[in-house]
Image (cartoon, rainbow, N blue to C red; front, top):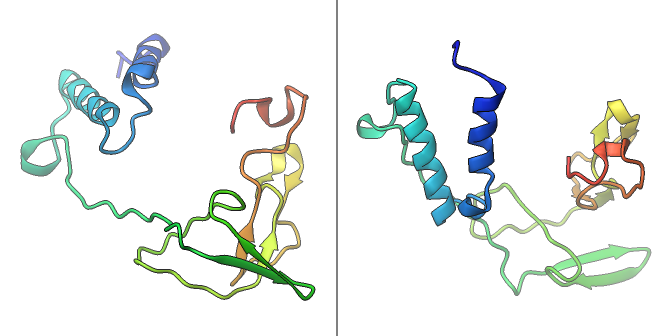
Length: 155
């Protein structure tokens, strides 16, 4: 534990965040390099492998959910139907690991979907989202104030 230092951690983070690792995507070259690097650091620090077959790695199945081009979302309200086009009008995610997900539910708009008491911000205040599709803007509210959500950094 005496070897832990800010400079040492900074060097690891600098390498792992470098462009060389190409974003460290799962199954991509950069991700593979990152995992090998971390395993090597574990070995150099004397940590005992606890993964599969005496390694630092554990195999598991990843499930991917990819919206199909023919997917449809229709918004209905005040007697108006609007058909939305994937990636032009919306992006969506579901955490259900099924080949098809269908739903018919009311939706509720929650701004950016942020709860940040330190900024006196709560997009969910007074809104019941139970059983509804949550619609939100990605990112954070725009501002020129460098102290507002730590400025332009994505927090």
